[in-house]
Image 1 (spheres, rainbow, N blue to C red):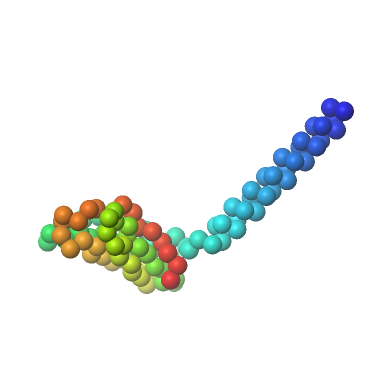
Image 2: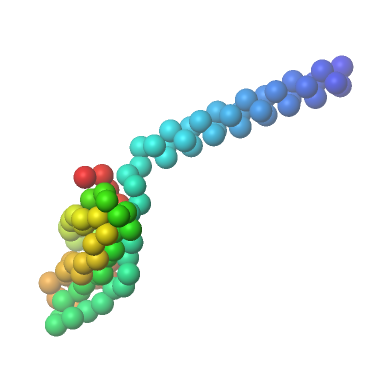
Amino acid sequence: MRKFLAIALAAVACSASLTLTTAAEAAAADQPPRCVKVRKYFDKGGQRYVRLANLCAVRTACFTVVIPHHKDPRGRLSGGETKSVRYGRTAMTPRALYVKNVSC
């Protein structure tokens, strides 16, 4: 009886791990590629900037700069391009929290 119970529990554990693996792979397929990388945040001339680099050599990448309590600016980077993007009109604008990769 103990052997049968152990075998049944092992089968349930294996099927549950396969289900979780399949769900994780499906969720990963829905995400856009992570090409945009933040190089640095800086202020210049009283305005806020973020320097971004596209790590994908060929693919154009789209991004959104996430700023608390403000409209999030969007943009695109060509393959392999590095660019400084202005996201705040003044230095009083809150600093960006992060840059999110989005699908184009």
